[in-house]
Image 1 (cartoon, rainbow, N blue to C red):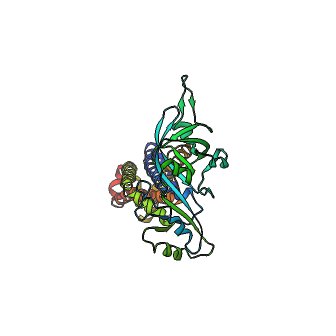
Image 2: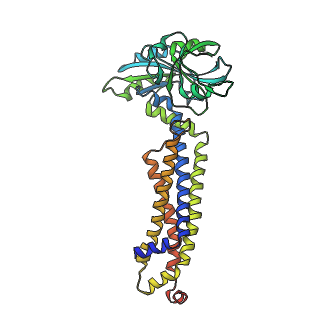
Image 3: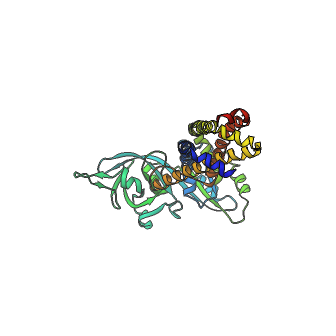
Length: 381
């Protein structure tokens, strides 16, 4: 009966392709939008993922995310360093400062300050020498800004990217590019600058810091360390997972979850409407054949298997095609500023939704087929 079911399905080629297209379109929309959504969330706490060595982060209790940061006195750094079982603690600055190129391009840059001694948190350098970061006014700029955002256009239309040795003006202070790095972009098309913490102080005119990144000693109880840190109500100590969650939750309050939830809902509606309607029409057209099968002794269980086979087949093909196109799209934008993250859990999520769509379209047809009277419909064959 499975072979018969397959012939009934592919015999109507237009309906077969239409159902696959409906599920393909639904999975494509759901998986693509979900991957973008997950990518945006991961960017919200990129400071934690980019600086992977610390397992403890200390912030002001009022700090929620990049758009809501309250700085701390640099004296707090010594308090963290003196905490029992802390191996090291370093300052991390994050500031938004005005930037201007020698060609006159203006923007607001995200400026990160990293510890002068250890340089913990420095991005991967594509060009330049890490030792040059100790030069006066030295900065590292992200490759996208150097090659696109802050690049100049010559009279003949040729793009001239920023290069090592070019000068910038950051908050009315002279800066010189000593490195170009691969850096996770933020939400907005802003230049991203890295410099030593002392250099950032000169750019900003403030000695305050925004984060303290620390490492616990081997086999130390991190919960006890955090308990000691948090006994001071002026600071908040968190594990990197807790900080990620704190920033992500703040980000989700912007309403982005609702927006992408609507996209997923639209994908489900597309799957239900297109695939469901075509599958139901195809079933109506094949009612005479189902009546014949029932008249010849076919059981409800047998017919149920036939319809489920048809629904699952179009669902599997549509799911594979939708997922494949999403992954190809993700690969195509890999080196751009667009966000895309496709973990294994997303495969399970979209797969579950594909099963729900298949179950829905199968239910509509099963309900109709079970009600037919074989003696009535066989006369129309």
